[in-house]
Amino acid sequence: MATQQVLEPAAAAVTSVFQPGKLPVEVIQVDHDAALPAPPPLSVLIATPKDAGTYPVAMLLHGFFLQNRFYEQLLRHVASFGFIMVAPQFHISLVSNGDAADIAAAARVTDWLPEGLSSLLPAGVDADLTKLALAGHSRGGHTAFALALGHAKTTTTLKFSALVGIDPVAGTGRSSQLPPAILTYAPSSFSFSSPAPVMVIGTGLGGGKENALFPPCAPGEVSHAEFYRECKPPCYHIVVKDYGHLDMLDDGAPELVTCLCKGGEGCKGVMRRTVAGIMVAFLRSALGGGGEEDGDGDDLKAILRDPALAPTTLDPVEYRLA
Image (cartoon, rainbow, N blue to C red; front, side, top):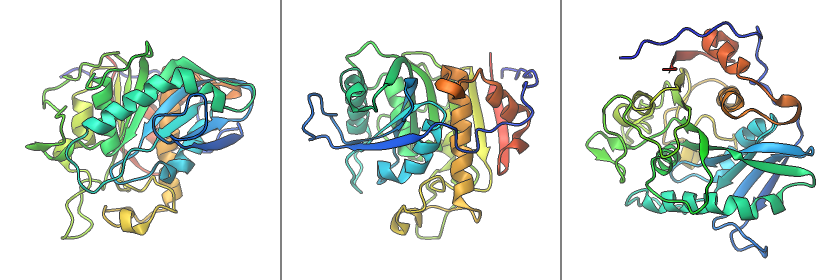
């Protein structure tokens, strides 16, 4: 097993990524059947800085039986640091025959970005698609990793420059992976079509049961720890210890959905700020930022060196750089 490198102390003693950034944000809902020259192949929710500038782009894929609007506060937070966030809405069904349809749909949204995204942004705001990140939560994490692994082909020349898994889940157990089965149970076995740094964010309570009637929402053998284990360096794994699988969703997410997963007792706003802050720190390190919020990775270094900077407990915090 590779020896972890010790990071040099970050220049900043305190990181501000766990609070909203300085940039004002506009949220734009676009339907797939909108009367536009280039409508998106799926309905999308866009969170973008309002101030003129050129910003990196990150696409966030939602979890099973969830809606993109449940992530609006998370999207706003990340966008306020100089990122254009694009969250497609997949078809919702309680019956799952595999993830192939969502992987293909995510590929179509990726293909749409060069042609369709710019016309939807505020005046003076431009998307830098040479800096493109892919993120996914829960089953959407499986979708994101599967797309990065080439299980659906894009027709553009765009490359994903960073990958984020937010409590990713690849099925209900080792012997019952969601098709396509992407976990190999071999260390550093993921071979992405565009090698990129990876951040895997886990939850400490995701592997627990809310009650005897429902299985864990993020079973241990197919969730964040195994995803991290199979990544090649540079990769990072940060677990939000006292929160659960759906605790980063907006407070308005229906209880009919959130009651299925074990959750933490703390304020959900703290969980959202923690997850968003980790994403911001990682994306700024991997892609750079926009406008006044540009960064060089100091925030990520600070969090890795001193996890107590976060508003709640992060444990474990680990990484492999080589």
